[in-house]
Structures are given as structure tokens and as C-alpha cells.
Image (cartoon, rainbow, N blue to C red; front, side, top):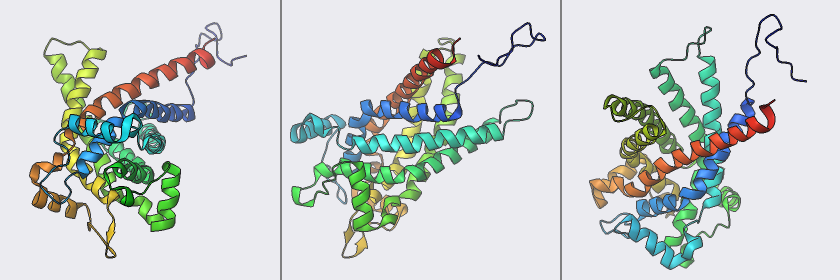
Length: 314
């Protein structure tokens, strides 16, 4: 029998039962993975566009639609899902770690009276959790970048990874274990920028929409605030993202890496491809960010409801 107090037992009512932390973390990772299944083609297009025209002002793809149709024509329907296994592993590692770190820090810094941390402290917790999750998820990120980039290369230059585990094993064996964390610093920097921009812009956008008098605090308001926040977050994080993508995909030339670090990538992109090339792939990046967030929360809510119905009701 459940050990919850009844109203007649000293007039006390037991606390509502909630799912264990391990289940919350598991559901967070699964929700992110479920959303990735839908937005993986956008990730592929974004990565291809960021790598197109590398070192020159000529672009391989004119627009996101041109990139998508070119990939479909050359590689077929399965081609737009290249790297899906790596995308799923990235969510399993990054999202679960970020959620776990955030939850633990949030609870530790909540006051004894139940007072939650202030906005700045929450932002710091979010950035710390994001950076830690990014570090853990970097190997899957490296595999994802390389797998999605493979189709644009001549057949004799392709790496030909079969799946994410094959990619991780081959990278470690052929290039050394440290290569799995190549681009770790810009990956963590992007996570910090994304978390900071999302937190600030989402709360500000939501407040603006509520103050306009046209919105109430409901799912439509949350969706619109998420899309506005996504626009700000995309603009702020894309230069760091392109540095990450180029570093993780680079090859060694005469024993030397193509780029020294993230700053070297940004300088070379501006010099050889133009300033606005720092925002290559803006449309698919933005189109991915909003739906991925919305889908993640939808899947998360459904899993929580199912768990509550199956294990916590009665």
C-alpha cells in the first residue's frame, strides 16, 4: 500500500508523488531525441551551408531550399537523414547531462524556505549546465558534423562512417582520442551563449507580448515568445557555431590543422568569404531551434502524463 497520509491522520495530507530524478533525466533525453528525428534534415542543411564555399566567396548553395533540393537530388530521401544516429546520441548525452546538472544546482541553490534562485543566478546555473553538457556531448557533435558533411565530398575523400559508434571508434583509432573533443571550447562557448540568450530573450519577449494586451499566459504566448527568443539566440550564437563546425570537420594538411582555433576560423571566414558568411545556414538553424524546443516539450509532457497515469495514479 502507498505510504501516504490520509486527511484523517492528524489532519495531514501527504505530498503529491512525483517521478524520480532519474526518470526526469531519462525523459528529458528521450524528448530531445524524439524532436531530433523531426529536425535532423534542418541540422544537415545548416551544417552543409556552413561548410560550403570554405575559403572562397563562392557559395555551394544559394539558399536553404537550394541546399535541401540539391541533397535530395544527389543523395535521395535517406540522404537528408545522414548522421541521425549521431544526432540522437548528442541529445542523449548533451540534453540529459544539461538537465541533470541544472536540476542538481537549482535544488542546491534554492533557499531553505523554498525561495528559488534569482534571475542572474538561474542564468549562471543554465550557462554552467549548458557548458558541462556540451563538453560531454562533444564526441557525438564531432561525429554528427563529419557524417553530415560527408555527402558533399568527392567519393574518394569521404570518411564513410556507418553510424555514430563506427565514427567514434574510427576517430579514436585513426586520429587519437583527443580528436573526439576537437572544437570543445567553441562548442561549450556556443552552449553558454545559447543559454544566456535564450533565458534573457525568452523572458523579455514573453513580458512584451503579455504587456501588448493581445496575449494571455497560454501556449500561444509561449510559442511566440519561443520563436522570438529563437531569432535572437540564432543571431547571437551562429558565429560561434560556424567556428565549431569548421574545426570539428577540418583535416590535417601537411601535418598541420587547417585552423589554429575558433578565432582563426572567424578571421579567415571574414577575410575570404565575407562578414555575413558568419551567419551561413541562418534559416535552417533558426527553423530547427524553435520546432526542436516546442517538440521537446510536447514529448516531455506526454511522457510525464503517461508515467503519472501508469505509476503514480491511485
